[in-house]
Image (cartoon, rainbow, N blue to C red; front, side, top):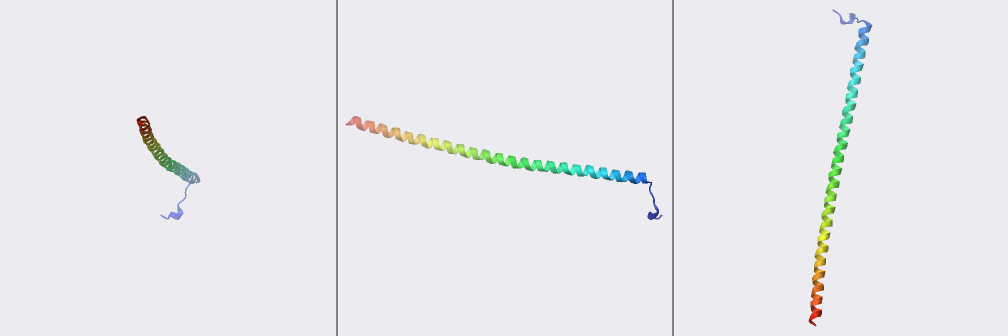
Length: 93
């Protein structure tokens, strides 16, 4: 049998072409959805990284504030001690 002599009814050709178009359209839509999902996942990863960095910066800032408060408290203790010694020296005179 010679493949060149095959003929198909035009309705069958239209059905095949339409089905092929429908399949291509569904695949294109699916690819688009996959791209959208991938983009959202990448953006979420960036957001998570930014939030982690911000949280780390806040923790570092809080540590600095606590250290500054501790230093200030130590300085105040030295000042109080110095005042006590000054008062004791004045009383002895």
